[in-house]
Image 1: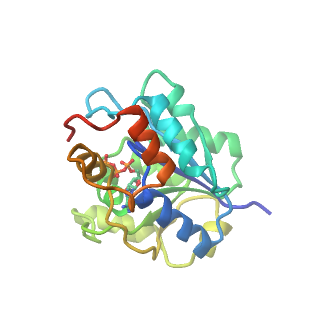
Image 2: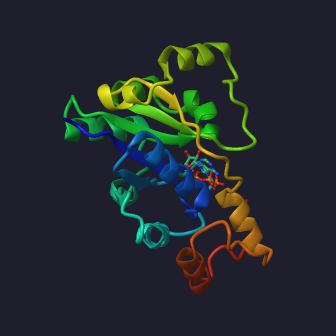
Length: 217
Ligand code: ATP
């Protein structure tokens, strides 16, 4: 019997409850035992994270210290060059073998952008896609062909995620959390409280390190 493994990628600049809570709830809903958090290396042409890779890693470690559901995978952070999700999932599939059910977790905003990701179609060859709700983003894809792609892969049965190695898209019924890293960086810069938005050890670390005090966008 293979258990479903899930990967959760992002910049995590910083990690916040909008990342952690939907995934913890999802794990309970669908019977997920382990989620691997994989912070990414940001391509040079994109706005760079304000925190260094070491600081982002430290914040993740503080955030998951009391949450056995999560483990950290530093492979993308350690690389000198950014990697595409499609390539990372191919590598992960090779490591786990062809039978193991694998899933990549994203938020609703990432689903809408998904067709612009490098070789996005191949991602479903190697894993399922689990989408968490996020307020403020439409539910349908912008282009009809992408909506068709979504519908072709959609499943409403979470058992499919456990019984098949890859290929399904599951729109999870997780609650909305109106939190983003951008909002947190802006609030910190303005000296506004963020206590409800991220774990206290992460917030303390941010303050100790003097992070997010200059203007960001
Ligand atoms: P930024 O504001 O800097 O763009 P972010 O808060 O969107 O950052 P990322 O690290 O870019 O965070 O996101 C990693 C993953 O987490 C993405 O798949 C994103 O869709 C998801 N995510 C982030 N915030 C939320 C949220 N509030 N609810 C659901 N999913 C979220």
